[in-house]
Amino acid sequence: MRHLLTLFDLTPDELKTILAVASHLKSMLRKGERPSILANYTLALLFEKPSLRTRVSFQTGMTQLGGGSLFLGEDVGWGKRESPSDFTNVLGQFVDAVACRAKSHERVEQLASFNAVPVINSLTDLSHPCQAMADILTIQEAFGSVSGKHLVFVGDGNNVSRSLALACAMLDLKFTLACPSGYEFDQPWLDRIAEKYPNADIQQTEDPHEAVKDADAIYTDVWTSMGQEAESKIRCAAFANYQLNAKLMASAPSTARVLHCLPAVRGEEITDEVIDGPQSDVIAQAGNRMHAQKALLVFLMRPEWITANVG
Image (cartoon, rainbow, N blue to C red; front, side, top):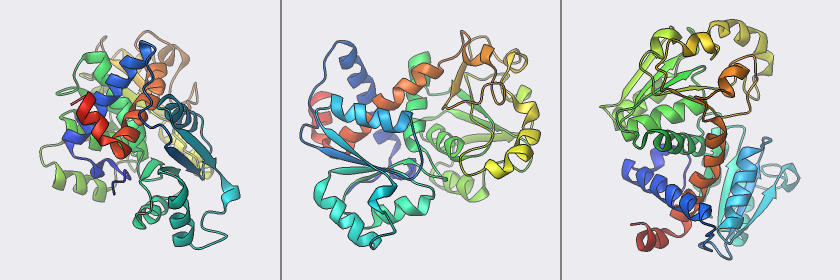
Protein backbone atom coordinates (compact mmCIF):
# COMPACT_ATOMS: atom_id res chain seq x y z
CA MET A 1 0.00 0.00 0.00
CA ARG A 2 1.36 3.41 -0.98
CA HIS A 3 1.34 6.50 1.24
CA LEU A 4 2.64 10.01 0.71
CA LEU A 5 4.00 11.33 3.99
CA THR A 6 6.94 13.19 2.47
CA LEU A 7 8.32 13.35 -1.06
CA PHE A 8 10.85 10.72 0.04
CA ASP A 9 7.98 8.28 -0.57
CA LEU A 10 8.27 8.94 -4.32
CA THR A 11 11.04 8.38 -6.82
CA PRO A 12 11.98 11.28 -9.12
CA ASP A 13 10.31 9.45 -12.02
CA GLU A 14 7.12 9.01 -10.00
CA LEU A 15 7.11 12.70 -9.13
CA LYS A 16 7.54 13.53 -12.81
CA THR A 17 4.64 11.21 -13.63
CA ILE A 18 2.37 12.94 -11.11
CA LEU A 19 3.29 16.33 -12.59
CA ALA A 20 2.55 15.03 -16.09
CA VAL A 21 -0.82 13.69 -14.97
CA ALA A 22 -1.59 17.02 -13.28
CA SER A 23 -0.89 18.87 -16.52
CA HIS A 24 -2.98 16.35 -18.46
CA LEU A 25 -5.98 16.61 -16.14
CA LYS A 26 -5.70 20.40 -16.03
CA SER A 27 -5.74 20.52 -19.84
CA MET A 28 -8.78 18.24 -19.92
CA LEU A 29 -10.61 20.45 -17.41
CA ARG A 30 -9.98 23.52 -19.54
CA LYS A 31 -11.71 21.70 -22.40
CA GLY A 32 -14.66 20.93 -20.15
CA GLU A 33 -13.69 17.27 -19.73
CA ARG A 34 -14.03 15.77 -16.26
CA PRO A 35 -13.35 12.04 -16.53
CA SER A 36 -14.85 9.96 -13.72
CA ILE A 37 -11.59 8.22 -12.93
CA LEU A 38 -12.44 7.83 -9.24
CA ALA A 39 -16.17 7.15 -9.55
CA ASN A 40 -17.50 5.61 -6.31
CA TYR A 41 -14.22 6.30 -4.47
CA THR A 42 -14.31 8.24 -1.20
CA LEU A 43 -11.59 10.43 0.32
CA ALA A 44 -11.66 11.28 4.02
CA LEU A 45 -10.17 14.62 5.03
CA LEU A 46 -8.94 14.22 8.60
CA PHE A 47 -7.98 17.72 9.77
CA GLU A 48 -6.57 18.96 13.07
CA LYS A 49 -5.81 22.40 11.60
CA PRO A 50 -8.06 24.86 9.74
CA SER A 51 -7.71 25.18 5.99
CA LEU A 52 -9.05 26.89 2.88
CA ARG A 53 -6.90 25.74 -0.08
CA THR A 54 -6.21 22.21 1.15
CA ARG A 55 -9.78 21.36 2.06
CA VAL A 56 -11.47 22.94 -0.96
CA SER A 57 -8.90 21.67 -3.47
CA PHE A 58 -9.14 18.07 -2.27
CA GLN A 59 -12.93 18.08 -2.05
CA THR A 60 -13.42 19.77 -5.42
CA GLY A 61 -10.78 17.57 -7.00
CA MET A 62 -12.53 14.41 -5.84
CA THR A 63 -15.85 15.71 -7.20
CA GLN A 64 -14.27 16.47 -10.57
CA LEU A 65 -12.86 12.94 -10.64
CA GLY A 66 -16.32 11.48 -10.05
CA GLY A 67 -15.74 10.53 -6.42
CA GLY A 68 -16.78 11.90 -3.05
CA SER A 69 -15.20 13.23 0.13
CA LEU A 70 -15.92 13.50 3.82
CA PHE A 71 -14.59 16.19 6.15
CA LEU A 72 -13.61 14.79 9.55
CA GLY A 73 -12.86 17.37 12.23
CA GLU A 74 -12.39 17.27 15.98
CA ASP A 75 -15.81 15.66 16.47
CA VAL A 76 -14.62 12.26 15.22
CA GLY A 77 -12.37 11.91 18.26
CA TRP A 78 -9.16 10.89 16.51
CA GLY A 79 -6.76 9.76 19.23
CA LYS A 80 -9.22 10.59 22.01
CA ARG A 81 -12.27 8.31 22.09
CA GLU A 82 -10.64 5.07 20.96
CA SER A 83 -7.26 3.57 20.24
CA PRO A 84 -5.41 4.77 17.13
CA SER A 85 -5.49 1.24 15.69
CA ASP A 86 -9.26 0.89 16.11
CA PHE A 87 -9.89 4.34 14.68
CA THR A 88 -7.69 3.80 11.63
CA ASN A 89 -8.73 0.24 10.85
CA VAL A 90 -12.41 1.13 11.09
CA LEU A 91 -11.87 4.16 8.86
CA GLY A 92 -10.24 1.83 6.34
CA GLN A 93 -13.48 -0.13 6.13
CA PHE A 94 -15.33 2.93 4.85
CA VAL A 95 -13.04 5.08 2.70
CA ASP A 96 -10.46 4.59 -0.03
CA ALA A 97 -7.86 7.13 1.12
CA VAL A 98 -7.23 9.70 3.85
CA ALA A 99 -5.77 13.18 3.45
CA CYS A 100 -4.53 14.19 6.89
CA ARG A 101 -3.69 17.70 8.09
CA ALA A 102 -2.06 17.12 11.47
CA LYS A 103 -0.36 19.13 14.18
CA SER A 104 2.61 16.75 14.29
CA HIS A 105 4.22 14.55 11.67
CA GLU A 106 4.17 11.61 14.06
CA ARG A 107 0.38 11.62 13.81
CA VAL A 108 0.34 10.89 10.08
CA GLU A 109 3.13 8.33 10.49
CA GLN A 110 1.01 6.54 13.06
CA LEU A 111 -2.03 6.71 10.78
CA ALA A 112 -0.08 5.18 7.91
CA SER A 113 1.59 2.52 10.07
CA PHE A 114 -1.58 0.39 10.18
CA ASN A 115 -1.75 0.20 6.35
CA ALA A 116 -5.53 0.29 6.55
CA VAL A 117 -5.87 2.90 3.79
CA PRO A 118 -3.52 5.10 1.71
CA VAL A 119 -2.57 8.20 3.72
CA ILE A 120 -1.67 11.57 2.20
CA ASN A 121 0.09 14.17 4.29
CA SER A 122 -1.81 17.36 3.54
CA LEU A 123 0.31 19.31 6.07
CA THR A 124 2.39 18.56 9.15
CA ASP A 125 5.03 20.47 11.06
CA LEU A 126 7.73 18.55 9.17
CA SER A 127 6.53 18.46 5.59
CA HIS A 128 3.98 19.76 3.08
CA PRO A 129 4.47 17.56 -0.02
CA CYS A 130 1.18 18.50 -1.72
CA GLN A 131 2.13 22.17 -1.63
CA ALA A 132 5.56 21.44 -3.09
CA MET A 133 4.08 19.47 -5.99
CA ALA A 134 1.78 22.38 -6.85
CA ASP A 135 4.72 24.79 -6.61
CA ILE A 136 6.89 22.76 -8.97
CA LEU A 137 3.96 22.46 -11.38
CA THR A 138 3.66 26.27 -11.33
CA ILE A 139 7.36 26.75 -12.09
CA GLN A 140 7.11 24.17 -14.88
CA GLU A 141 4.23 26.07 -16.43
CA ALA A 142 6.12 29.37 -16.19
CA PHE A 143 9.32 28.13 -17.83
CA GLY A 144 8.35 25.00 -19.76
CA SER A 145 10.86 22.93 -17.79
CA VAL A 146 12.18 22.90 -14.24
CA SER A 147 15.55 21.26 -14.77
CA GLY A 148 18.39 23.66 -14.09
CA LYS A 149 16.15 26.39 -12.67
CA HIS A 150 16.91 28.21 -9.44
CA LEU A 151 14.29 28.49 -6.70
CA VAL A 152 15.02 30.89 -3.86
CA PHE A 153 12.99 30.70 -0.65
CA VAL A 154 13.18 33.88 1.42
CA GLY A 155 12.00 32.93 4.88
CA ASP A 156 12.01 30.20 7.49
CA GLY A 157 13.41 26.68 7.09
CA ASN A 158 9.90 25.37 7.69
CA ASN A 159 7.74 22.50 6.42
CA VAL A 160 7.13 24.19 3.05
CA SER A 161 10.76 25.06 2.36
CA ARG A 162 11.90 21.59 3.48
CA SER A 163 9.55 19.97 0.98
CA LEU A 164 10.62 22.36 -1.77
CA ALA A 165 14.30 21.69 -1.16
CA LEU A 166 13.63 17.97 -1.48
CA ALA A 167 11.55 18.43 -4.64
CA CYS A 168 14.36 20.49 -6.16
CA ALA A 169 16.89 17.78 -5.29
CA MET A 170 14.69 15.21 -7.01
CA LEU A 171 14.17 17.23 -10.19
CA ASP A 172 17.54 18.93 -10.72
CA LEU A 173 16.73 22.46 -9.56
CA LYS A 174 19.06 24.61 -7.50
CA PHE A 175 17.52 25.62 -4.18
CA THR A 176 18.61 28.47 -1.92
CA LEU A 177 17.19 29.31 1.49
CA ALA A 178 17.74 32.95 2.50
CA CYS A 179 17.05 33.36 6.20
CA PRO A 180 18.48 34.92 9.37
CA SER A 181 20.82 32.91 11.56
CA GLY A 182 18.97 30.38 13.66
CA TYR A 183 16.20 29.73 11.15
CA GLU A 184 18.07 27.45 8.76
CA PHE A 185 17.19 23.87 7.87
CA ASP A 186 17.75 21.28 10.55
CA GLN A 187 20.81 19.20 9.78
CA PRO A 188 19.08 15.79 9.87
CA TRP A 189 16.79 16.87 6.99
CA LEU A 190 19.76 18.09 4.93
CA ASP A 191 21.66 14.89 5.69
CA ARG A 192 18.71 12.79 4.59
CA ILE A 193 18.47 14.66 1.28
CA ALA A 194 22.23 14.42 0.70
CA GLU A 195 22.22 10.68 1.35
CA LYS A 196 19.40 10.08 -1.14
CA TYR A 197 20.40 12.74 -3.69
CA PRO A 198 24.15 13.39 -3.36
CA ASN A 199 24.18 15.76 -6.35
CA ALA A 200 21.53 18.05 -4.87
CA ASP A 201 22.41 21.77 -5.00
CA ILE A 202 21.00 23.23 -1.78
CA GLN A 203 22.44 26.47 -0.46
CA GLN A 204 21.74 28.60 2.62
CA THR A 205 22.60 32.27 3.09
CA GLU A 206 21.78 35.24 5.30
CA ASP A 207 21.85 37.65 2.34
CA PRO A 208 18.52 37.71 0.47
CA HIS A 209 19.74 40.18 -2.16
CA GLU A 210 22.67 37.95 -3.08
CA ALA A 211 20.40 34.90 -3.07
CA VAL A 212 17.94 36.27 -5.64
CA LYS A 213 20.53 37.59 -8.12
CA ASP A 214 20.05 34.65 -10.51
CA ALA A 215 16.70 33.36 -9.26
CA ASP A 216 14.08 31.98 -11.61
CA ALA A 217 11.46 31.84 -8.86
CA ILE A 218 11.36 33.67 -5.53
CA TYR A 219 9.18 32.17 -2.83
CA THR A 220 8.14 33.41 0.58
CA ASP A 221 5.83 32.29 3.39
CA VAL A 222 4.52 33.74 6.63
CA TRP A 223 7.11 34.45 9.28
CA THR A 224 4.92 33.01 12.02
CA SER A 225 3.11 29.74 11.27
CA MET A 226 0.16 28.22 13.10
CA GLY A 227 1.31 27.15 16.56
CA GLN A 228 4.14 29.72 16.67
CA GLU A 229 2.01 32.71 17.70
CA ALA A 230 3.94 33.16 20.96
CA GLU A 231 7.11 33.75 18.89
CA SER A 232 5.53 36.37 16.62
CA LYS A 233 7.37 39.47 17.92
CA ILE A 234 10.73 37.70 17.95
CA ARG A 235 10.21 36.32 14.44
CA CYS A 236 9.05 39.63 12.99
CA ALA A 237 12.19 41.30 14.34
CA ALA A 238 14.44 38.52 13.02
CA PHE A 239 12.92 38.58 9.52
CA ALA A 240 12.53 42.36 9.19
CA ASN A 241 15.16 42.52 6.42
CA TYR A 242 13.70 39.54 4.55
CA GLN A 243 10.51 41.11 3.22
CA LEU A 244 9.76 40.31 -0.41
CA ASN A 245 9.33 43.86 -1.67
CA ALA A 246 10.21 46.03 -4.66
CA LYS A 247 13.74 46.62 -3.35
CA LEU A 248 14.47 42.90 -3.11
CA MET A 249 12.84 42.22 -6.48
CA ALA A 250 15.15 44.86 -8.01
CA SER A 251 18.08 42.57 -7.14
CA ALA A 252 16.51 39.70 -9.10
CA PRO A 253 16.17 39.10 -12.84
CA SER A 254 13.13 40.74 -14.42
CA THR A 255 12.02 37.26 -15.52
CA ALA A 256 11.83 35.90 -11.97
CA ARG A 257 8.43 34.66 -10.84
CA VAL A 258 6.97 35.28 -7.38
CA LEU A 259 5.42 32.48 -5.31
CA HIS A 260 3.66 32.32 -1.95
CA CYS A 261 1.77 29.33 -0.51
CA LEU A 262 -0.86 31.57 1.18
CA PRO A 263 -2.40 32.77 3.36
CA ALA A 264 -0.15 35.84 3.26
CA VAL A 265 0.30 38.54 5.86
CA ARG A 266 0.45 41.42 3.40
CA GLY A 267 2.84 44.12 4.50
CA GLU A 268 4.84 41.66 6.58
CA GLU A 269 6.66 38.96 4.56
CA ILE A 270 5.44 40.35 1.22
CA THR A 271 4.11 43.68 -0.03
CA ASP A 272 0.94 44.28 -2.02
CA GLU A 273 2.87 45.59 -5.01
CA VAL A 274 4.81 42.32 -5.28
CA ILE A 275 2.08 39.78 -4.57
CA ASP A 276 -0.29 41.61 -6.92
CA GLY A 277 2.41 42.55 -9.41
CA PRO A 278 3.11 41.31 -12.95
CA GLN A 279 5.73 38.79 -11.80
CA SER A 280 3.39 37.07 -9.36
CA ASP A 281 2.07 33.55 -10.04
CA VAL A 282 0.52 33.24 -6.57
CA ILE A 283 -3.09 32.78 -7.65
CA ALA A 284 -2.20 30.25 -10.36
CA GLN A 285 -0.02 28.49 -7.79
CA ALA A 286 -2.99 28.19 -5.41
CA GLY A 287 -5.12 26.79 -8.23
CA ASN A 288 -2.48 24.19 -8.99
CA ARG A 289 -3.00 22.65 -5.56
CA MET A 290 -6.14 21.00 -6.94
CA HIS A 291 -4.54 19.79 -10.16
CA ALA A 292 -1.48 18.31 -8.42
CA GLN A 293 -3.64 16.61 -5.80
CA LYS A 294 -6.01 15.18 -8.40
CA ALA A 295 -3.00 13.62 -10.08
CA LEU A 296 -1.75 12.27 -6.75
CA LEU A 297 -5.14 10.72 -5.95
CA VAL A 298 -5.22 8.97 -9.31
CA PHE A 299 -1.60 7.85 -8.86
CA LEU A 300 -2.41 6.25 -5.49
CA MET A 301 -5.81 4.72 -6.30
CA ARG A 302 -6.00 4.20 -10.09
CA PRO A 303 -2.42 3.90 -11.42
CA GLU A 304 -3.64 1.72 -14.30
CA TRP A 305 -5.55 4.72 -15.66
CA ILE A 306 -2.29 6.65 -15.90
CA THR A 307 -0.60 3.81 -17.79
CA ALA A 308 -3.48 3.62 -20.26
CA ASN A 309 -4.07 7.34 -20.75
CA VAL A 310 -0.91 9.32 -19.96
CA GLY A 311 1.95 6.84 -20.23
